[in-house]
Image 1: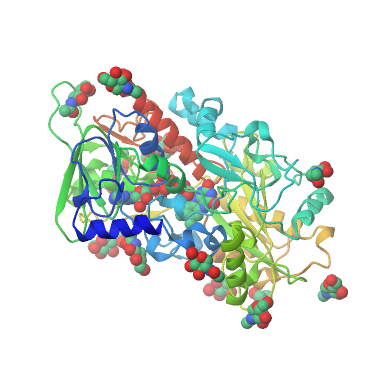
Image 2 (image 1 turned 60 degrees about the vertical axis):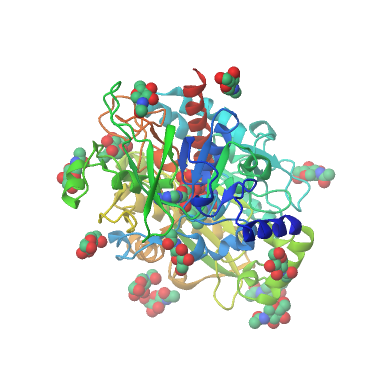
Length: 602
Ligand SMILES: Cc1cc2nc3c(=O)[nH]c(=O)nc-3n(C[C@H](O)[C@H](O)[C@H](O)COP(=O)(O)OP(=O)(O)OC[C@H]3O[C@@H](n4cnc5c(N)ncnc54)[C@H](O)[C@@H]3O)c2cc1C
Ligand SMILES: *[C@@H]1O[C@H](CO)[C@@H](O)[C@H](O)[C@H]1NC(C)=O
Ligand SMILES: *[C@@H]1O[C@H](CO)[C@@H](O)[C@H](O)[C@H]1NC(C)=O
Ligand SMILES: *[C@@H]1O[C@H](CO)[C@@H](O)[C@H](O)[C@H]1NC(C)=O
Ligand SMILES: *[C@@H]1O[C@H](CO)[C@@H](O)[C@H](O)[C@H]1NC(C)=O
Ligand SMILES: *[C@@H]1O[C@H](CO)[C@@H](O)[C@H](O)[C@H]1NC(C)=O
Ligand SMILES: *[C@@H]1O[C@H](CO)[C@@H](O)[C@H](O)[C@H]1NC(C)=O
Ligand SMILES: *[C@@H]1O[C@H](CO)[C@@H](O)[C@H](O)[C@H]1NC(C)=O
Ligand SMILES: *[C@@H]1O[C@H](CO)[C@@H](O)[C@H](O)[C@H]1NC(C)=O
Ligand SMILES: *[C@@H]1O[C@H](CO)[C@@H](O)[C@H](O)[C@H]1NC(C)=O
Ligand SMILES: *[C@@H]1O[C@H](CO)[C@@H](O)[C@H](O)[C@H]1NC(C)=O
Ligand SMILES: *[C@@H]1O[C@H](CO)[C@@H](O)[C@H](O)[C@H]1NC(C)=O
Ligand SMILES: *[C@@H]1O[C@H](CO)[C@@H](O)[C@H](O)[C@H]1NC(C)=O
């Protein structure tokens, strides 16, 4: 490693092109200007597409990534450090517009600004969603390839189930028959035992009803309490699309180039295409410095936008692809009228609830006491084990449906009877940076089948001005009713006999609240404390071929144009009832296969 770094430095001194280094810091160093495919965004899905397309030596691929490298970033590598939040240098620094239902607060909307995209900064929960979620994708797009049955292949190509770092007996904690051990991206059960592990399941057994054990929530039927799976390797490191799909054996391929620090502004129609009615968008415009000159690169086959839920929609709008009326008013020449661009933005709102506990054996000190943190770091560095190998303070996850009275009253926004509306995440400690004193038990609660929809739009002809992001949290009455119910479920769970003598008292504003409190009391807590679970999707939604809404066809081609696809979490036609990275990997894997099939045919 040291020697190769030395060679690199010498190479730089002599100003030689870095032909063997396949990740470039400046597009001027690229060895070629001719590529079959240009992928915009080296994020979660983008790197999957880059990897799969370059399996065919006949295809050359260029990836343009706005952020910098993930290499040697210890804060990214260590799973537990993700609880400290995304570091600003790896973030797009977005926040929402004022959210009416949340006292007009601006909610931070973190997105990875680094190779690997959000998979380099996320919390690593590996949740596929329900079978119903994918069957709904298939139903609304008219493409069985997106059904639960259809996507099994892509889940298997993605997942490489591994032993956890430091817990050896995992029998009964997952169902091996629903996992793949041969994919690219590492997935594992918790690597560090928490002293509350058994209590979490004891409370479930005591309460019964909606509180029940589920051997494996990734089976397509997520309801109940399960052991949590994360994208963490046996060595206790984060597995991102950058560490897995761009591992050295892949990045070495002669037909793959990745360039960092390259921000794409627009796609441009190359030349009019006589043989088809639509414009062909095969030219990508980008900059190295935001206020510097703009350059272009052309793909001989296709441009693939993988800029994520905000990046891809932003580039389309900058390019004149969107609501033509809105674009004209803004002063951008409309080229393709697709009013759904940016619409139907959907996210999961989350609320934290915390209790003081009669224990010092919680994870709290790691994020507030450097002596403790340094000790854990030393253990991590030496053995790849200890408390830092997990990306949260708890080892379980739970999913619930709301009472039928609610779905009868408001309609059911979930994808089907086996799909959750609510998620609960128990933690042996505060989730994030805790108060200066106290040891905590926490329950994060989220609405994972929300009815609310928002939008993302632009307010400037400057392609680098931040977009206006409005997830529309709680704009639908179902969602606030569901969140109240989630709070009552959390309060009930924390009152199980097992926790007596362990849980001492509810913390902060929760002190005045019980499961019997009035709705307004719960609502005030929800309004003050809701934030984003960081799962926005849907701004470039798929719809059936010929549908009068939607942005991409089920094969992820932008409707009505040539040479342009979108492959990332922006294409979800509905939000999944789970954290969104596994579904984003599915989009990447199937997207790549659809593209390959197109050009390998002949
Ligand atoms: C803090 C956080 C925690 C999360 N926790 C979890 C979790 O625990 N489990 C889970 O399943 N999901 C989680 N998620 C969500 C999940 O990570 C995302 O849904 C998923 O990674 C999105 O993948 P993507 O390919 O759509 O976009 P991204 O992975 O975000 O990739 C987009 C890429 O495009 C680049 N880009 C954007 N615009 C441009 C441009 N103009 N020019 C060039 N490049 C550009 C970006 O820099 C980025 O690299 C979390 C997300 C965040 C941010
Ligand atoms: C690559 O192209 C060559 C020549 O056209 C062809 O024979 C070969 O099958 C192609 N390889 C793949 C993997 O498609
Ligand atoms: C976000 O802010 C940090 C500094 O606080 C900066 O380093 C980073 O480049 C910013 N991200 C973007 C996309 O501008
Ligand atoms: C592993 O755990 C299972 C389930 O808790 C238990 O039945 C089994 O005895 C354990 N095996 C060993 C070797 O400890
Ligand atoms: C023109 O359209 C045809 C048919 O869709 C396609 O095969 C061809 O690659 C396109 N050419 C250009 C230059 O966009
Ligand atoms: C397009 O935008 C205009 C102006 O904001 C709006 O009035 C119109 O409803 C939008 N069109 C569609 C189809 O959404
Ligand atoms: C939003 O999604 C719904 C399906 O949930 C669809 O009927 C509607 O047309 C979409 N709206 C837009 C503007 O795309
Ligand atoms: C930090 O942890 C160490 C080791 O447990 C302890 O001795 C010290 O008192 C703690 N510091 C603070 C400020 O709590
Ligand atoms: C652990 O390793 C990282 C990265 O190599 C280093 O920055 C850090 O100082 C080390 N920590 C300890 C406590 O040794
Ligand atoms: C849109 O941009 C204009 C001009 O920069 C600004 O005055 C206005 O406040 C912006 N609107 C929003 C919602 O940010
Ligand atoms: C805390 O736990 C200890 C035993 O571990 C017990 O003696 C003590 O009474 C408990 N304190 C409270 C306030 O429940
Ligand atoms: C609880 O409610 C009382 C009475 O409304 C109020 O004075 C107190 O500040 C509240 N406590 C917390 C922690 O919010
Ligand atoms: C909610 O926030 C408002 C304004 O900051 C504050 O006055 C109120 O006490 C908070 N209520 C709760 C329950 O936290």
